[in-house]
Length: 444
Image (cartoon, rainbow, N blue to C red):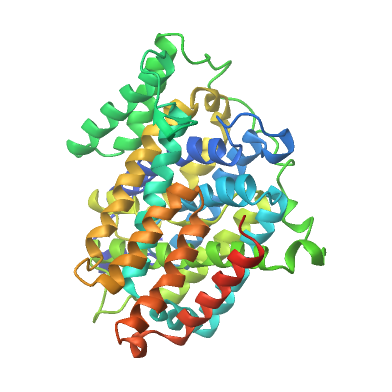
């Protein structure tokens, strides 16, 4: 085992890898509560039950997707990087594709499956790097930041801190409401933990919020702590239900969905791989060793997750916490993987993680993603405008896809008008045409 993971070459040992794997798990364990709540549209009232995914099945799918993805990353790519259904991608799945576009969640899972298959093909052929390089860095950063604003808005809304108002569209919530105050308590606690640089701050913040809710009687007491694994049958294989239905998958709307899943996963994975590998001193000669294997592991995990019944699975930047604790090899990812597998037996605890408990996680993760705004050159107006529109339109239209579309339409226009048309890659012109068609035929 030591030889396989090159412990000697990396200067590590079992103790460091186990502690690193455990730290990574605790840092990203919040997804076990947030993802089922997100995909089941918890806290969204007035919608038919068929639009909601089964929360217990999604919990199982989340655990299994994280287990498979982390195992593949650890054994094939041998990196201390764990995977799980991605934040932002699950928000796009639930609130844009299902809630706004009205696409059945089964068809949305088909979109995730297709994006995973395309991801594998692009990785195998080397086209992935070509496409990534075609999209300007500022637009990549704007998309990431915009998703941060969007999921933070979803968190604020789910907690009741932001509510709808006929005249102004949005308004501050009722701070005399005990559930709203519980969410505020959770946000304050989590922010304090983050500022104090406490490991696994987001997860601990959620746990403390849940405990506070239990002590005050605001949250239901779980019937048990450990139980048998819930059935994954309600979501397992649903991605194949519409795969032979031409009307469901051969249309511009479905194409936009697949491209968005693919696009966000592209850059989320690339950024995480480089960031974690840099911190662990794994980059050699300005190149990432075994990069293709890492990308293959990520893409395969997305396919597996779609089959089980969850949104896109991706690499987690929280893996840096494990690296900081000493993880250097893929063995740490294997440790994290088996901890996700063990989490399958703790499904009764899901009832405690209501929207006001998960809201702090969404808001804090949103703030972390918004930091990418610093990487946009705001002194160049031709770049600043499309980047600004991406960020602004995501929360205001309640659609990640619409935010991307607006920004990607404006970018070629502003660059052409500023005399920089040669700096625009042909792929960007193609995306502009595609998104214009999206607004003509799909967006309402």
